[in-house]
Image (tube, rainbow, N blue to C red; front, side, top):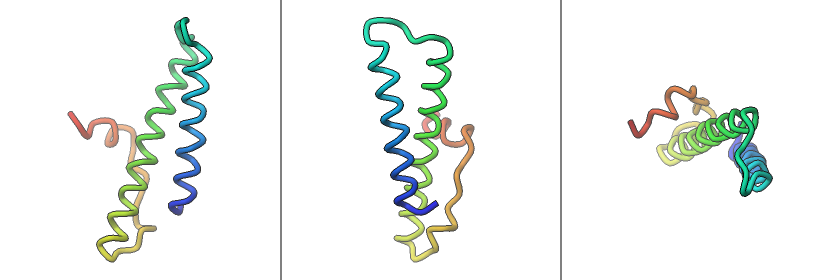
Amino acid sequence: MDDNTVLQRIGRLADEEQELEEAHVGSPLSKDDRERLKKIEVELDQCWDLLRQRRARRAAGLDPDGARLRNEETVEKYLQ
């Protein structure tokens, strides 16, 4: 995935996240919507991580295509 593709994916996910949240203002999310929101959040974290990897590789003079999408376990445990 090139940078533009990653950024487009981030945009679509962010739009979906916002739609889900706005559709339930003042009322709780359904179980399915909570699960979908969690999946969106994880995928956004993965996409941002991939974009950061690509940029770091490019800045280091390496091929950005060597960056790889990391699993949920990795991207969700960075701050722990």
